[in-house]
Image (cartoon, rainbow, N blue to C red; front, side):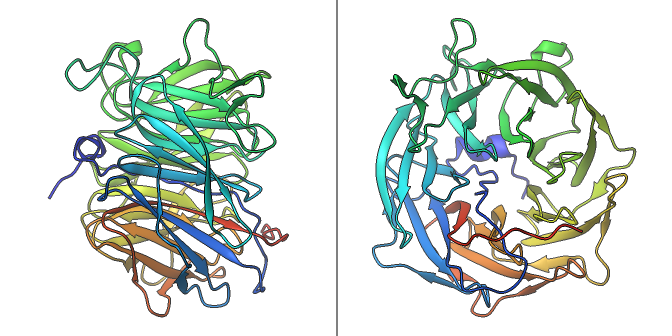
Length: 400
């Protein structure tokens, strides 16, 4: 079975990485983490909430879970860096919903914003918690019946977690008369570097701005007012679909579902990209990618193979080498999203769309190897699509 990310959007099953920037810990602790998993089968969509056992990685669903997503077909979620808010995009309603997160992990809807274009597919938040970025399949005036280029929408985040400037809630950062920044065709994923200075969007099936229709990564510089300036568009394989960066902001990694490869890019001082000479082989249909919070390892979820690739990152060049020993680890059926929990960087979770489960893997910081956590996989609502996580601890990951 070959399944492109744009095809899954049409089938109401698209997903990209949703990562919460919660604080992380350098060793076992008693901090309580929470994992949030969107699921698209029901109308409205659902959000499963789990406590994470920080000693073993086991998930326990909390009372009242699942919660409604506030719309149809929630495809991605992301947590604020301070752990106080969760943001969920509902693909079929063209909305983003902001939830307040209680100290017990429970969700309380606060705000629903309409998006300027249609069919949002992925989102991310900068590390400072001041801007949220969403990619949409179509700009205004385009649709499934009138296809065209996509859009990148930027929202300021207020101190209370609401979107839009205080005087104009739900209003994105303007781009002249537009409420979005232009992308190529079928944008599927977005990433902001840890320093917040550069944003990258993946265009899966071509970018009309460079004229040749090849898939690209659009690179933007972030201005002091949150506005974006296009740096350039960079070729990105056959069918790129997901993107992640390392904590230093030196390297980008992009999965390609059309060629079963991951591409590496070196980020230059001006935000431009240089592709690494040799792509890195993955298993069948890579669909999600994440870098561990120490910046030592990168992991890829493969939708058709039901497994995860593990690689070690060369700290000088960014080259990714399969970890020693076994570098493929089994998860549930149809993993669409991959998250490295932020409190300790010791567990990985995948949302398994076909299996209606969440898989948990323990990450060995010394080797990068993975092993199944006890009781995995964990039950989820039907058609889980993406994951986000927070922690209420106050630790930081020790860097190599």
